[in-house]
Length: 184
Image (cartoon, rainbow, N blue to C red; front, side, top):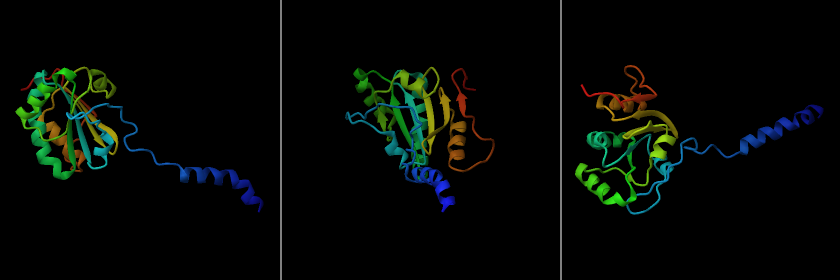
């Protein structure tokens, strides 16, 4: 009996841990207040529950590299959606420019979610560098990669394939800085 009495505090601690709520998926992700073009608040966690990988891309209609990169994202969504990849675009355009955002969506035939209300502060909070385009790769509620600047198709596809389990070649860098890279 003395043995059990001396272990009572340990038993209480063990019971507390066993009944504590699980860590919320995505709790370590920076906050992002965004909405769809119909004005509905968006929730990144809802997409995390459905997708293996989220490609969260911050962009703007006035950004030249964003215009260059967007067709690649549209093709990637079509190619990888069946394998659990979800692209989400977050526009940092001014609220008064929603018409331009709608035109941009139509021009590039974007069929993945586009959110508005993103800001430069969001890009900074997500540690995505000083400019757009900027992209975070999210898996299991964690940021597992970042690309500053325009993504390049070979490294983009290598990163997606790696995250999906195809570990050919070297692992992708945690942060790929393409801000001052010239296309060859």
